[in-house]
Image 1 (cartoon, helix red, strand yellow):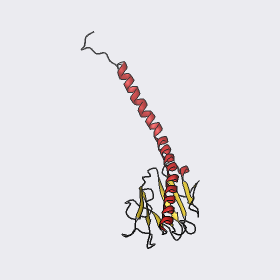
Image 2 (spheres, rainbow, N blue to C red):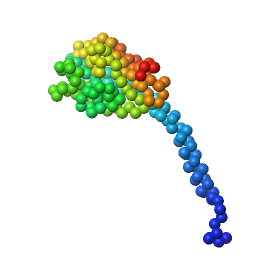
Image 3 (cartoon, rainbow, N blue to C red):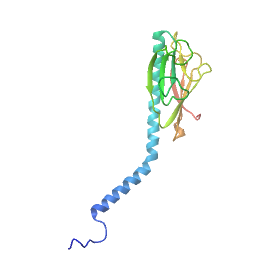
Image 4 (cartoon, rainbow, N blue to C red):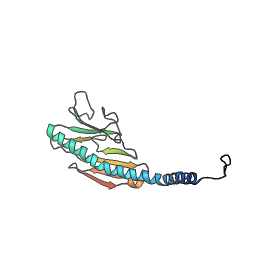
Amino acid sequence: MYFYCKEQGFSLFELITIIVIIAIIIISLISLPFYHDWMQKHEIRSIHPMIQQHISYARSQALMHRTTVVMCSSESLVQCEKDKWHKGIVIFIDKNKNKQIDRDEHILLKTEKNIKYGTLTWIGSSSSREVLTLQGDTGLPRGSPGSFYYCGHQDTGNNTRYKIGRMATLNSEPTSKC
């Protein structure tokens, strides 16, 4: 056979390569929605321990320093910002009880949290609408502290309420409120 005369069609190697590429594209298109749902469920599983650890830490610091400790949301991790719980959390000693970080107040903990598959919001009591305040005498919040709400972008069946009890315990339950 002459080299300059090529027969029409694909070689076996070319055919297998094309079939593999098409199979990869089809599998990725089918599995992409399931991947986002799986990642959202994984994110939900990580939120409960994260909130519980922050509340326990803030409570222990309030008791240790015998003063008011505030947990607030922040994107910059320098100042409290409204409804940025999905970006970060700051815990600080609130000397003047204004629920804002002032120059002379000590920041105890900064945590960057990048929640991608939903939003985390806080609905507090009438005395602490945007922050969680733990008292220095008991290490507990006064009255009814409030709840965190995780609202998923993909599957609304994954929406979860994290209710904080009077003893600063955290309970989770499914919710339709978002």
